[in-house]
Image (cartoon, rainbow, N blue to C red; front, side, top):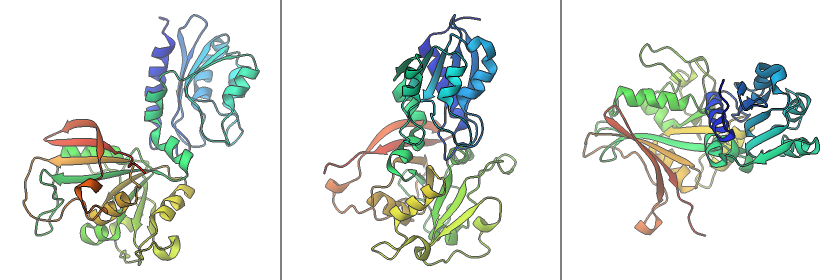
Length: 353
């Protein structure tokens, strides 16, 4: 085998961590690469599911005795507590690892402290290697852990003139099959898919993760959530079909906001209490507008079809903007062609004051 640099090993660890997206909540995604004393890769691992072995434990099991005297390269500070599994910091010490390279410190006060434990045991600990990249891959968990409510992605599909449906209400299909498959891939990375009751009444969506080529359901399904202040979701709605877990969040259960609808901050806090760390907000335009007006959207993913309608409902309703100076500015982070459509990813800029 060929020796690799710590930087190369961290890049590989970040790739490994991404394999756990959508299956680890309420835990983070973590990847680990173990190098022996000569710098050769002797073990790899990632955290695959909550309650399962952590990335370091998987990598140590692969490495066996070759971990002794080596280097562990891990995307997140090794945990220092006993939960459903034991502390990874202790496992690394017991395996005889001499150096641990960490991309991002753990912000969770319950699990953090691994770096200090490792240093106290005499190991060399380096922090920050590819930290920005690793944090980006774990952004939903890190954000939710630091503030106490989930990371929210607003996804919408529209024509180039911003219409989400035609004047007669028809909306299937604005975007291409390739874009719809891409949305299902996006759904598979989150813990909950959220819509308003208006979308349920108008479109009766399933909100499941499916393979569009054969219609089969993915093994792991995010929680389906309907924000329904007055409890109008029909008993026969497809979101109640048993294909995945469903929560109809009402104002009576969650609490009412100033407008009488579901209190959105309280709603997000309740989702966090259910183990949800990443939310995909899919509709409709009124709910999206309310989230944006409240500053509760962390990322926008728009699928734009090369079509024009000239009339019909807009993809976004009132978001609290009355003048151009109040516009919600976005920072575009990615533009990708998906089939004939464009997928634009952007982050809302923080407003001054």
